[in-house]
Amino acid sequence: MDAYIARQPILKKNMKIYGYELLFRSNSVEKVFSDTDADQATSRVVMESFYSRGLSSITGGKPAFINFTSRLLQENTATLFPKDQLVIEILEDVEPTLEIVAACRDLQQKGYTLAMDDFIYRPDYEPLIKLSKIIKFDFLLCTPQEIEDMMRQINLKGKLLLAEKIETFEMFDLAVKLGFSLFQGYFFSKPVTLSAKALSPLKINYVNLLNEISSEDCLDYRKLAMAIRNDVALSYKLLKLVNSAYYSLRVVVNDIAQAITILGTIEIRKWVLMIALMGLSSDKPDEIIKMSMIRGRFLENLNTKSIRAHSNDSVFQTGLFSMLDVLMDMTMVSALDGISLSGEVRTALIEHTGVLYDLLELATSLERSDWVRVDELTSSLRVDAELVSGEYLDAVKWCNELNI
Image (cartoon, rainbow, N blue to C red):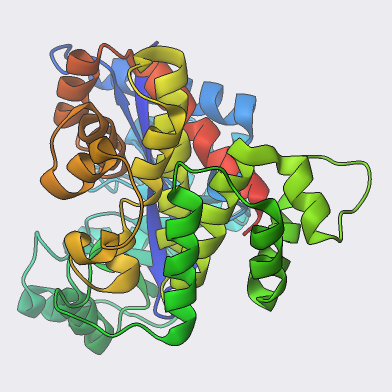
């Protein structure tokens, strides 16, 4: 069965990753499933995707939040997954029948974590509230006052409150003040300010490095090695990447020049671009650079296997630089000023047009589980759903293997 799979980050107050919600949808928008068919579709996607790739490879070892219908709860589907890697989301349309409460109690007693999704208080939910560790409130569905009122109606002792659909830092601040400790939404992936901002000397060095490595001119390996050696953080990150599980080298590489030689011109451009972006992201959530890397790899894979319309350098850079404005807290035009990029990459990132932008929008639509837009883009790009999901999950696995 063709299916789309999306991964949405769940952050703690310190902007570190707590876990990921994994969302699934059948490829065809028009096809209508019965409840039974929907359960079977979800089960099949979950099982095929996670047992072939490994759940921890998709979430980087963090908990996976997965929606469970009434039938999946009663059939104990959750017990097929390790209890320390799974958070069972009880969907809002699950009725708290005696059978459902008994199934959830059994899962909780076995050590599984339960979460109530899109929570709206009802007195008959009390048994499920008591069994759940996490309560999720939708900040677009409810007003702050409604959320406060519901919070007063339940016993919050030992509960984690998760604010979802958080789209701005103002919403994030409000959720923190209300007592929430977990947050889901893309508030962290937008620039805090869209105005001129002075860069620190260290960040200027990283921007200069981005410019040099993005240029189409031949690389001066000696000059590059010297620049990396003079920066302890760069040296550490490059050697960590070269010695990561992705390369599986038989010996540990401790020399910068040797690392550059092993990687070669094409790969060293890619890795140094990522390392420089990591430097720019030092005061930002780690998830921003991870999402940028996943986008770059995802676009590169799709281009190689399906689109074949642009150079891999261009598509990788489009994904990798897609949140440069966020990392530098300025407009994309200002962020790209002085960085040598091809016209097609600039067109995609600044003007939001062209095939490269369509590829980027496919990645961002997938992240947000905007299935309708994903369908439109896969159709116009002539990419099938199975390829999209597979390459997305492989990009996630690739990023996790780098262990940045």
